[in-house]
Structures are given as C-alpha cells and as structure tokens.
Image (cartoon, rainbow, N blue to C red; front, side, top):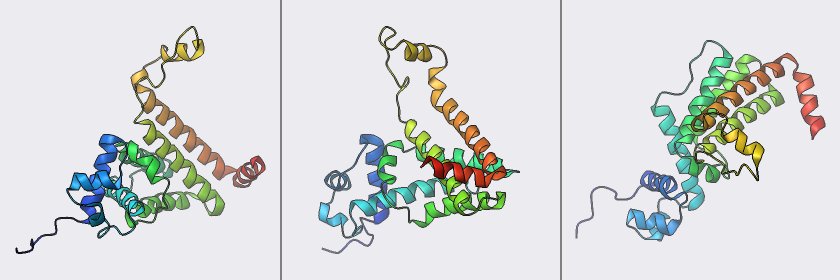
Length: 217
C-alpha cells in the first residue's frame, strides 16, 4: 500500500485537539487526546517528545498566535497608560476564550516565541514609560496577575456565589445590589484602573514603593 503524501498527524494538530479538550471537557489526558485524533498514544510522542509538557507549551503558543492574528499586539494608545490598558484587555480577552487551560499553562515555563513576544511588547511599553530594574519586574508581574486572574474568572458561573440571606446576609445583599451579569467585566475594569493608578505612583516614588514591598516580605 502506498504511503500517504500528506502527514496525517502534526504537532499543531495535537496542540489544537488538546486545546479543544480543555475548552469542552476542562482537561485533557494523553489517552483521550489520542482517541480524539484516532491514533495510538505512542504516536503522539513521535511529534511531541516531551509529552504533556510540550503539549501545554504548544497550547500557549496557539493562544498567543490567535491574539496576534486579531491584530491585538502591539496595542495602540497615545500614552503608556493607554497602551498598558489595551495590552491587559487584549491579553485577558485572548486567554479568556480558553479559561480552562490557564491553570495548566501557569504551571509551565513560558519559552515559546509567540508568548514571549507579547510580554516583550509590554516590557518595552513599561521601559519607555520609565520602569527599570526591579520596578519593571514588579510592574510586569502586577499586570500579568490581573490579566490571567480575570481570564480564569471568565469561566465562573453567573452569579458566582449561591448565598442564603439567613446564613450569609452580607453576601446575599451584595448579590442583589447590582448587575450580576456584569460583575466579571466591572471587576476587571475596576482592577485595571486601580493597577494603572498604582503604576503611576510607583513611577513618582520608586524607591518608596520598592522599600515598602520588601518590608512587607
């Protein structure tokens, strides 16, 4: 029998199928991934020798490629605050389309070119604004935590809590006081503006900010 002219299985197909499993079933395993692709588990290792670790890294690269394909990076803006704001919105939206994959992603070192380019873009924005050294790392980490945390929250149900007024009266009052359907978006916007305010303070008093953070440790 003649061999097929096109390769039936590629690393990219494996990454895409694994991401689909995360989106649909909230996790993936090598046996389930092999079954979806119609191959044996051993066949996967011919294309991703590092197994699960390589697949997770490939998923992250896919998500970053999706962000680039939409033209989200580099973000536009007149001021560095506008650019940081748009970067956080762009990255949160890209990751928020696949929230179930994020816990697995944060457990692996970021070393793919696509994602590193996105973070390089943020580092350049912050450096141009005046962040350097430890202050730059603090600013990068602060924005990263906000974007990723909010992206994970995108998978939470609405409302996120089920509280009884008799048992948890304060929480129950909070749930009936506003527009629950917008709580994720409103919380992200509030957190983003607070983050930008904090970054502005760090630029004004960098030594005080660094001293305070070290003292807290």
